[in-house]
Length: 227
Length: 303
Image (cartoon, helix red, strand yellow):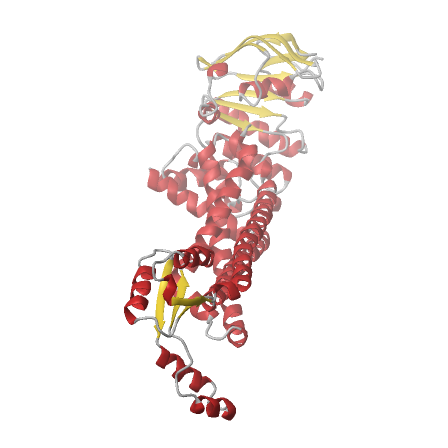
């Protein structure tokens, strides 16, 4: 499903963000990527969404080489992926319903499907009664749940979550992780980048540890947060 | 599918416009000012051209014939003049008509009337009043007359007396046109820059929104289109606002302009050309809005 072959990413000031990374993530996996700040975790996710091109190496998603994508093809790639960010990245000018429906509109879904699916997704994340609220009228936990609703509404094959609990308290963090687990159980591949030791340890799934742009440890099962 | 997308794009553009009412109000206001400036320039150009053409209408060249010149000779000169394409009109004034006009003009002056009564013959000459299509053509018309075979029948041509005046009118009309064009162009550039910058700032506020839409998988056109709709809405509202303000301004100023320039109706001109003016203002508004949005949004779509 996701294949990284010998990926390196060097910034203009010759800082090496990723160094010869090889990683394979199979369909339906739940992988946590951990490591100290500056280890290259977020760069790795940006490479997967083609926000950033690696300096060398090959990225394949569903067998498609991302380097070969034209500017017009990038939206098609991103529609296969649901992305969740630490800072939520919600559309502030749109209300909760519209934030979620936007992800369906861009894939050209018919209005009937939007009317049916969006309330369901909001229901799943517990925001059914806040459909008309704008992001600034929601709490941090609600914002992140809304972002999750948006990420899963178009039934993506992959969910990338970059520190989704970074701005949340314990209870809200727990809710968010539970949602991600539920989505994973339905067959979606989940890649979670996090700093949160408790969460990683409680998940007991595959854990990839990064340091200084390299993968230093890859625990296939019952992984623990070890730095 | 396309229809559905178009509908969504228009609704989304309208919603943005409505929800950003504070910003929309400011942007529309600035654009309306720009359009009023344009309309003002149209008015100034109109008044300028009316002024110049009324000056030009006053300029002509008169050819005076000797008392013994035959009617045939005069008619021949007239026909030849009329065949020139530089000549707009030729008016013949016979000696009798000239006398009648002279008497009428000096009807109040008893001394002149008495002197005329004492004269046994008509002292006035038959003449042709020649108007050129363009003030620059008088010199060539006069040289045509100088070489005409009936030159001997002509007593004098008053071009030489009027030469200075004709030259001055010509200068005024030329420089009015040139300066009008230069000033119009400069103001137009400033106006476009102001409107463009205002829209750019409006869109800059939504920079992160555009980036998010890209990250969620929105195609460039799907992201761009609502902003173009929003831009054209600014244009339409600004156009309507500018027209309302401008026409009320013209209506209140028109009678004062008529005092200074008799026979000129500013409101008449703008009502008469109403459809063109309205279409022009709306087209300029929409064009300005859409093009500015298009350029402004371009740099945020590179993620």
